[in-house]
Structure formats: C-alpha cells, structure tokens
Image (cartoon, rainbow, N blue to C red):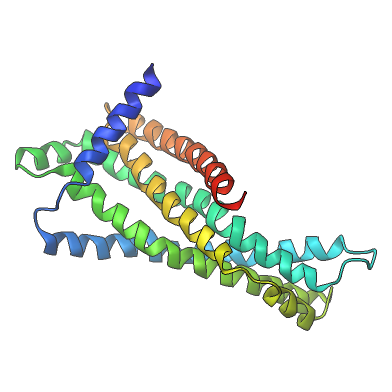
Amino acid sequence: MQFIVELGRYVKLLGAVFSRPEQWKTFRNQVFKEMNTLGIDSLPIISIISVFMGAVITIQTASNLDGGFIPLYSVGYAARQSMILEFSPTIIALILIGKVGSSISSELGTMRVSEQIDALEIMGINSANYLILPKVVACILFNPFLITLSMVIGISGGYLATVFTGIMAGSDYEYGVRYDFNSFDYTYAMIKTVLFAFVIVTVPAFYGYYVKGGSVEVGRASTKAVVSSSIVILILNYVVTQLLLI
C-alpha cells in the first residue's frame, strides 16, 4: 500500500515537473548550468572507471583463451560488445546514481528543510518545474555523450592492456573491435542511456523534494534515493533488454 502511495506522489511530482517553464531564458541558463554540474564534472571519474573496465575485460577474456580454438580477435569483439551493450550504459548509470543522484537528493532535501522551496512557492513559482526540469533535460541531453565517451575510452583501455601486457597483438584486438559490428547495438545502448538518465534525476529528486525533518532525514532520503534508483535501473535494464534484444 505504501508503494502505491509513493508511486502516486512520484507521478504527481512528474506532472508538476513537466509543465511549461515560465521563463525560457532562465530555463535555458539552468539547463547549461546543470550540464556542467551533472555531466562535465562527472567526466574524470567516468574516464578512470571506463579505461580500467576495458582493460580488465580484455585481460580476463584473453587469459581464458588458452585452447587455441577461439581466435584471438574475439577478445576485441568481446570487449567492444561488453562495453557497448552493458558496462558503459548500465554500470556507469549505477555509478552516476551514487555521484549525481545523491547530490540531487541532498540538494533538494536541504532546500526543503531550509524552507527555500516553500519560499519559491510563496512567490508563485512552480518549484518542481524550476528546480527539477533543467536537471532532467540536462541529464538526458548530456548522458548520451558521456556514455559514448565511456565506450570509446573503455575500448581504448582494452587496447592499451594488449600493448602493455603483451597478451595478444594489437592488430588482432583492432580487428575484433571492427568485426561484425551491428549499429543497432549502439542504438540499444542509447535507448537505455536516456531511460536511465531520466531515473537518475527524477527518483532522487522525488526523495529530496518530499523530505521532512532535518539534516538526518536529508541523509536518509539520499540513501533511499540511491538504493531505489539502483533497483529501478536494474529492473528497467532487464525489461529493455527483453524487449529489444530477444
């Protein structure tokens, strides 16, 4: 019963979020600001994680090809498919929940307990639209670039692993990366990326926007936001995969 109540409040919040902005210039400026905060500031950690993910995938795959029956170029193929289909869109989304999602929940929660949101509403401003919609638009627009960059860096990290460890020839890895590429795989990843971006912003925003109490409750709301968003993304990942790849 509590789940149904929370789901109803979430849908009600989305209705307020996706109303028409009152001042388009202010909205545009907020979107660019959120792109910097939610997207560009995440580049360092995404880059570091992606390069090591690609390297580890390559080393693990190559170390298990001892029989000689499977060609070495399949290592590059496996690294490419792993990064595009799952690691970049899904694992990076889970990481962004911890960084971006918790930040959104804490920011809105602090504004709620300090009565800044109440002050906006007293002035006749749609606080949900003003505070949350720019974050949603910024994340949906920027995350595809972020995830695409993660794919490129991850595949490059796999190549660097072949160069520095000598587990296989770099030319074999390059051939595997190019082998039998299906453009729909990238389309599938981008569909997941956009859906995950929506969850990364709206679920933490929901918990932060409706928080009650003081700083302790803000911390609890942030924790709930990360856990709930992670579960939603994992379920959504299964559903989208079932619908698009099977």
